[in-house]
Amino acid sequence: MAETGSDGAASQRTGSEGAGSDGIGSDSTTDPGTARTVELHVAAVLRDATTALATLPDGTPRLEAELLLTEATGWPRTRLFAWPDHPVAPDDLARFAALLARRLAGEPIAYIRGRQEFWSLELRVTPATLIPRPETELLVETALEALLADAPLRIADLGTGSGAIAAALATERPAWQLFATDLSPAALMVARENRVRLGLRNVTLLRANWSDAFAPASLDAIVSNPPYVAAGDPHLVRGDLRYEPREALTPGGDGLDAYRAIAVDARRCLRPGGWLILEHGYAQGSDVCRILADIGLKAPTTRRDLGGHDRLTLARA
Picture 1 (cartoon, rainbow, N blue to C red):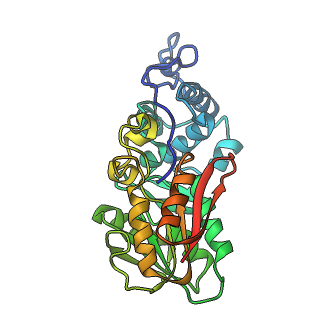
Picture 2 (cartoon, rainbow, N blue to C red):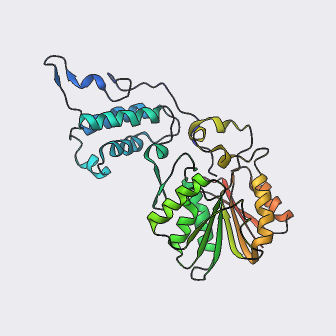
Picture 3 (cartoon, rainbow, N blue to C red):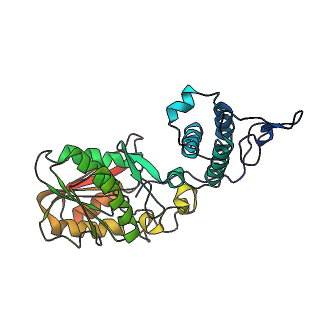
């Protein structure tokens, strides 16, 4: 699963001067001297929404304002830059206000829009799946570096969720056969939609508990971003994580049970020399290394992300 999202979402905010409760300067829509409706233009709408969104912690207010406005209007983002003085139609403005209110209440923008970019792929996401994070792209990069590009390898993505990791690997390596597993039927429906829309003929979806679906010594690699937040971690009730599926965030206990289970599966399912690549929390690298070493996997090594945090551990059978 991904690291923690923002630490919380403010339900109160201070908008720009004269902003209405939805953060879009609603008092400027009527000219009191003439009782005529005054059209709000793109620049003003984005300005007021950016001010409102800036009250959310760890956000990107201007980008989020632009994404919500394109969602409400159906325009490409380039149109916002090219036509800042273009008026926003009342119906579009009403849709935008509703979307903005959801975001200000803390709902993740990926769920509001129903999609998220990962590895330059636009993926369908719903509250049945985790939101793919940029940090997880390190797992994709590591797998691409470690495994032979043109060999017909068999690779399992355990706990696939939206199918983000499997989709990225399948796109980059058409010769590989990806098997994406999940226990959640709802998550698998989303992954199937992404597979079909992206035309990924080399991805097979399986409902399974980790590696239960695979025969001994049948895989060349296992990749996974499993649930790893410890029970009781305060991040579970803050920010985006409040909206994401709890079973995909935490296995309970110390947060390491998924690694213990996957390590046992890896010993059984990986071919000699096969790779196991696991994402984990920033403070879990040494624990995951120990789990993999104790089960007999070779040379467990932890890699850091661009922020300098321990992000994934890999080992070989």
